[in-house]
Length: 113
Length: 116
Image 1 (cartoon, rainbow over the protein chains, first blue to last red):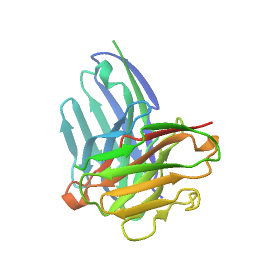
Image 2: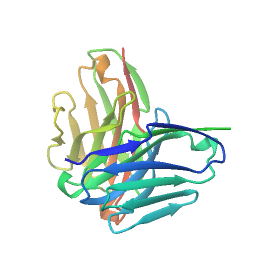
Image 3: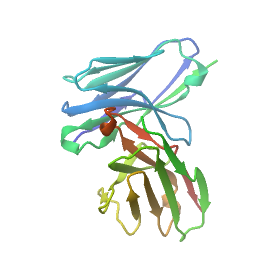
Image 4: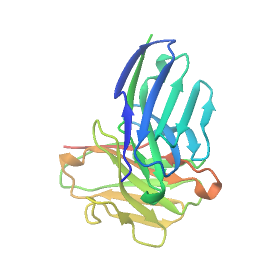
């Protein structure tokens, strides 16, 4: 059974700092991995999608990497801003889970002005 | 990627009543997914809804409590029945992008339900 873990659970940084969020998964047989952002009480916004054959994806100040063999992904946020404050979720779709999304518990990020 | 309109965005309901949540997608999709997010928790899949067949429920979720309709390829509803305070959660619908070649998932804006 696929399990997804995110570390840290919460992170507080000063504005302008570069930061890394971590995601690990137990079964390397994945279709893809997706990073989402969730603002309090809201839905999910997709940030980056990495297919199983890819190593990384970039969008603006965000860079996500994927190492399937070690079961890890990182989300790198450059020059953080207060508007980046949100919960960040990673999720995987796996060969043996019928294509369902399996979510981590999320990292709650607070960027202080 | 698909755009999903989800209604209502929030509601406060009395225990024992039911609430129906709607999701409208701007393109035809084969499968729609319904999730629950309890306070402080991550997302849990409730069921997968295919057009023309009964929804497939995950362990711990039953049709009598969470009936789902899927009348066509762009619309689905989830009803939370006979509500109790434990049903207070955010409910989200989602679609995958496989048909369009985008292999990621898109989510609705969520329904924040409070049961009093």
